[in-house]
Image 1 (cartoon, one colour):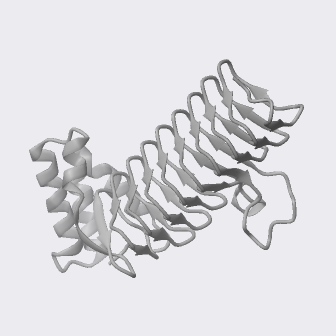
Image 2 (cartoon, helix red, strand yellow):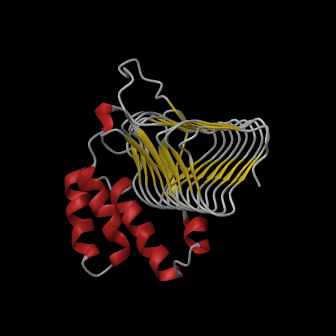
Image 3 (cartoon, rainbow, N blue to C red):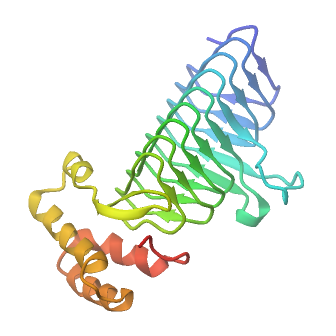
Length: 256
């Protein structure tokens, strides 16, 4: 299942059933899990690990050096989970020494054509990065985050679970869980209720999340007071706990 026109370094580790197309180049220090399919003209640099059943389309660049002037060739790595899809011309860079040396991708993510994940990012599970989206260095995405086309996230920002970035959104501060943002700079517009329905949240849970959103953004309360109230509510409403924990960890401030 390996095309003879592919160029594969001698130390590459291939799992059972791996497919590699013509003119693909796989460099030293790469491990590829069972069932992974790599199309033609892709390039994978190491040290990089891909889990099982990933799909890499033509012209994707996986595991290249970080685009960081501080990078001086020190050993860093890229870790990719299982069942991810990397479409045409997407680029995923390795980490830097300043970011603990690793970029991490979870499971079941879709990276559409032209998507970019910079050095030291952490991407959760079930995320979707649509065409021409970009993550700056050190960005963190929680599970089930969706970036619409041409949206981007500034370096060191965090985006919480189930958040949604509208097309062309320019995120410069942290986006809390469940929140839909739009604009440049991105601002909160509503709760990602449609996404929550698709993922099994019931009407009562969504109503409570909407109420939490209003406390945070529409009540006129200062952030400290709103957070205190949300913390009280979260003791009986577990769906609010990710929101409270996210706010407590925020370093860049929340989108407002």
